[in-house]
Length: 132
Image (tube, rainbow, N blue to C red):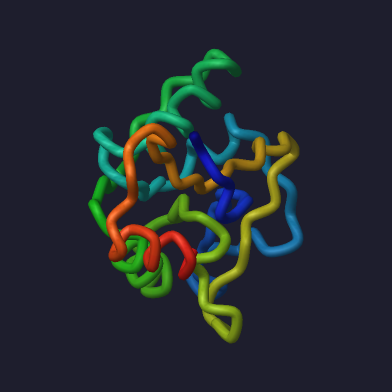
């Protein structure tokens, strides 16, 4: 059984000082002219983005692949590239970063918790589920 915890969009974020793109709308193809930073290939986020580019017959070759969204945001903030991160990871009061507008709308994703209804949940698991 699954339960939806959160719905979110993935976005490209960039430094205001490093990239003069604020207010402009880019296609996925135009975005490839810039250094893209994203989670490493083993992540579902990476698979998701590679599939989006493949559907448009584009080959995504990221400049940097990391295992941390926080680190991607930090590197975007100092202007090393344009980071692909879930929107809920971006600090709301961040003055240095902006979301790059795309002409193509990226699909919404869901964060879910999956569990087996036939198996009893431990007290710890029940408490964890209630926190979610």
